[in-house]
Length: 203
Image (tube, rainbow, N blue to C red; front, side, top):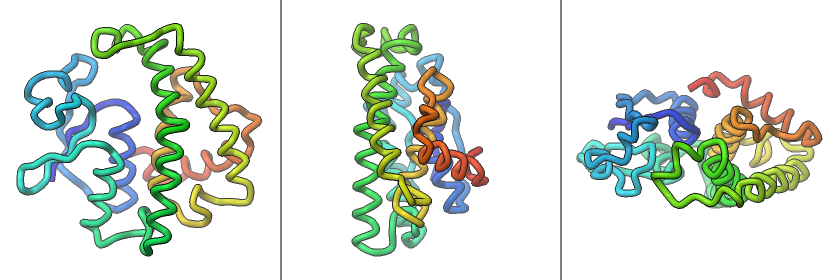
């Protein structure tokens, strides 16, 4: 298998997940800043023009980070990262979806419409006037998640999972683009430091 990689939090999710699995893949860099991901060669891998993409052994491609990570987990026999029982897998998917829809989407949309506007305005529809609203939604949902984290080591309790990987990568990204975690979110801040201490966090 080959991982088509670039800058940004989405590829980092897959790299960190791979590091947690202890698996190494051939990495091929795609120049996102130069728009290589929007060129014909990459669009054959992922018609959405997004990063990353995983080339399978049969030459087919997978995109979307949750699908890629679930596939990699299954290929490794199923691990705690996704869950070893139907109940654990459902719990992982529930929290991963909540984080994706409620925090990741508004955070990244706010970035694309503001700090990232010069890069994205020719690549997609952008609505700069909506940027602050999306950022506010992300912060509101971080506060909500902070309450849900009371007494928990990780998102799924004592089990480190894909939900933690996704949230860490995007909160780490958010801190670099003016959307840092509020200091009032003490549970989330403590969780972030725990995850940051894991070797995989530098993947």
